Structure formats: structure tokens, C-alpha cells
Image (cartoon, rainbow, N blue to C red):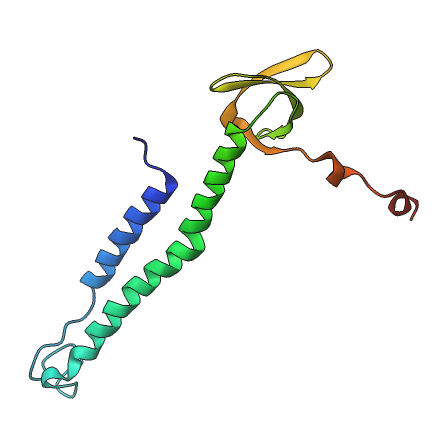
Length: 144
């Protein structure tokens, strides 16, 4: 199985978290820690561990909600679009060619880009359906 961008992002996020935790200063009892002799003594340094314990999942949730989840939703929408292609659909490819689906195969489609000009594409190259009503401008807007 080929790793996706999401898998790579999760892998590097985990590696980055491990690296950050490795460089966290540790407190030793008796005040001989990184804060020096005037630093906290005894068990008073336990708050930093709690902050790290809370912040790491908070960062992961932030990344998941604002990066990974929208990417997965977009991938699912793209897959349903590509699986739902039918003859006669107007589509736009990733090379920004607009055409009409002429034939549909398992992994490929044939798109007619002009009269009697048909090009074979992979299904994955279709990015969206072409909406001709969005391009239509009102007559009043052209006169101004």
C-alpha cells in the first residue's frame, strides 16, 4: 500500500513530538535542575509535565480538525465524483481541459473536447463537473 499525504503527515507529526519531548528540561529534586539553585525545589516542578501532557493531545486535535479531516472529506468527495461519471457529463480535467464524457471504462474515460475529437484520460484526472450555468453572465452585466 502506498503511503498517502495524511499517513506521512501523521508520521512526521509523531516524530516531531518525540523530538520536542526529548529536548524538554527535566527537574531534579533539590533545586539542581536547569533553573539553577534558585529554581523550584522538591515536588514543585510537576506542573510542567502536566502542561506537556495536555498540550500534546491538544496540538494533535488541532491538526486533525483543521488539516487531516478536511483533506479526507475532499478525497471522499473526489472519489464519489470519479465513480459517478456517466456518459454525457461535462467535466474539467486536472490539465484544465473541458469536455463531455463519451465513454466510461473501469480506470479510463474518453472525453470529447471538440466535434469528433476524443481524448482518453484516467478517471483520476477528472477534477470536477463543469457547470455551464456558472459561466452564463446576465445580459445587464455585459452592457455595463
